[in-house]
Image 1 (cartoon, rainbow, N blue to C red):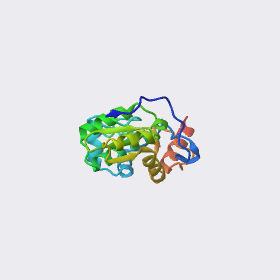
Image 2 (image 1 turned 120 degrees about the vertical axis):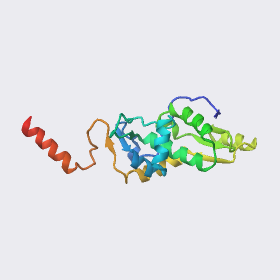
Image 3 (image 1 turned 180 degrees about the vertical axis):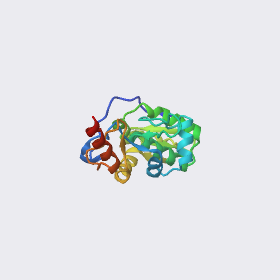
Length: 190
């Protein structure tokens, strides 16, 4: 992946990207089937990408039979970006290079990046000037504004059930009946 500039530290988050401009909870995640629906991929793709290390769930990995992977907001965003890059014909090898480069960045930093490609190489642009330079050099064919993918994701992700990695629940998520019974049983026996 060609890098236009080295990271300059955290950029301020784009206004309006998240509801009330707060970042997603680091402990809140989405199980595999939900992550697939949100990103528009198959479970087979998700499983393959996790096993090969392309997009590994950062909240909770699979730890044996019956365990559930838990993908963070950033993981689901990367899944969506990988899907878009694949749809445009970028090779999985080049996508791996791009994902490895993006992996170390926080959600705040990703909002200012646009990925552009000539079909072979993926370029990172962090300003309009870099995009113009890329296009003037005859390099860019298409681009993916990560902030646009984030905005789209924040709009659709709220329709899917999320869970907390620590076993707690979001304040706005209703407690299910089974969890309520368990809590009451613990109070009576505890």
